[in-house]
Image (cartoon, rainbow, N blue to C red; front, side, top):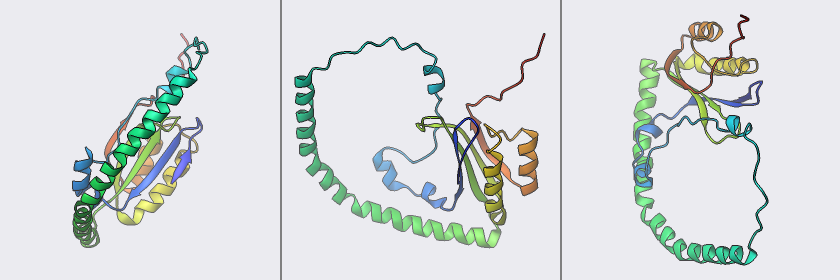
Length: 196
């Protein structure tokens, strides 16, 4: 589910159905890393306050055209290499899918028989959608995951941040029996100025 807060920031509330995709990722190791959330600062808040002192710089059309030709030639030279590499990695990708299927079957059996909690991610994107500024990972009983996600969606229509310590949020999480697994944010709570 996606919802826009009063400041225009987009929040995503995701139920994670496939934890085995995080557990079994041998193909991702070949690509240079595992998929995960990363919190980044929202620099657009600071950049809009800077003066715009740039002057128009004339464009050299010959150099731009030459650069375009070099890029096309490089792409033509690299395409066969990437194609062969992709074909060679198909067996590794199939092995990864098989391992994910086995791990997923075990995880689903544990979820059914032991009533393992389900994961709900609350992710807030910065205004230009280039990175996350807030992430909370919640664990909740499987039957309550969908109602929790729906209520969180309603919560963000009035709020601009997710803070598990906020009394309204804490009451809602307690009512659903949700546990905060991890919470990290770069957003600051706004406080009213105190007159001196």
